[in-house]
Amino acid sequence: MVRIVGGQGITQNCELELRPVAECFRPGHVRDTGRSAGADHTERARTSPGRCRGIGDARMVSIDDDTVAVVPEQSGRRRLLWVALGIVAIAAIALVLTLTGRPGSGLVGSGSSLAAPLVQRAAVDFRNAANADDPQRADASGNDWVVDGSGIEYEAVGSLGGIVALTDGRASFALADYPLSAGELEQRDIAQFPLFIGALAVVTHQDVAGGDELRLDGEVLAAIYLGEITRWDDEAIAALNPDAELAATEIVPFHRGDGSGSTYGFTRYLADVSDEWGAGPGHGALVSWPAGVGTSADGSGGVVESVSSTPGAIGYVDVGQAERASLPVAAVGNGAGEYATPSAEAIETAIADTDWTTDDDYATPTVATGTTPGYPLTVAVYGMVKRDAGASLTRQALSFMAFLLDESDVAARDLGYVPLPEAGSVAVREYWAEQLGYA
Image (cartoon, rainbow, N blue to C red; front, side, top):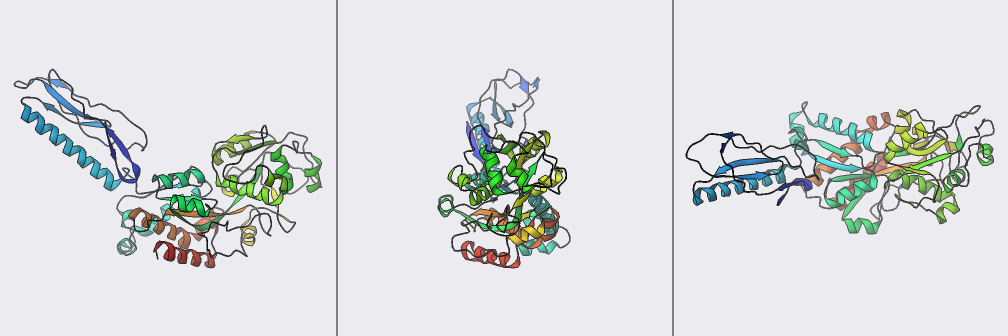
């Protein structure tokens, strides 16, 4: 078995196999199946027997994912020649894979599902901007890789999954809703920086009669996820919603089961406002949820589906997903003793006093939660790349992130995000220049 490793970790498994053939035949062919990396696919060559005089026993060199030609055996020399040519062909395939990476793709990113809608929109806008209107733009900006038929692929596997993919070389950039610590950055050889601002929504499957929106503060949310408040008509919820008629139904909490920036942001808010939560589950992309309380769901999509289909449910997802699913969004208590929903104005208030400079590679979370005015479940979305800024794919990733930073304001607001303020963009650009040599 021969394993060919191509660009961005793409592999092809090959085996050289000698197989006798009784009759003459039509040679097989080599075909790129275009299937995703990481899986072994075996498609044997199809040969058609035929009649051909003067050719005796035959041998075939085959490759998983299709074949190179069958070699007739008339003499030892000819057999060796054909085998040598087959090996050269395999080497050529390896070279092509190394140079081009995954067929039909260019830059691969991975990570936050919260960030996915904006990344997908920006990828299209980025390609259009680099494409037809100004043919010289690509050469000037170094973005000819976008014009030549390749593009940007983003895999919304969750923040932790994206960080792992970047570390392992399966992605050239990652997006996460939380920052890595200084130790993790050093261990993984990663640079990180804020790119734009998002927010989490507390969503419910609970009709509230007589009030505007359901109000929940951090203490109540922590008690729900600790299993201490189990019904919607609990007196603690009723005290926050004096004008609402709360149904006497059971609360069914859902949370993310994967490593998630949404979980990091939600549990960080709970830890900031609830001593019991801070001393217990704490905060992180993965936490030990209290035994017997709540149900895990697969990704943000799983949380949306579970809350939508379960009466009495509660969960947390990004604002855009909540809006698209038409789920009721709770007003959440902030550090000023007010209740806020995730509007653009409330998100901008939450980041108004943010210092966008850094002396620790942005390892300290950029946005405070629970202790400031504005919407308390506001989160920064961080871009992450390897610290090999001279590498082609890393520079391509930074080129796309610069587009996200500077030219995606309208798309960001359309999709429920908030762009970094000018001071934030300037600070990130300075960080790129100082730490990555990219300007």
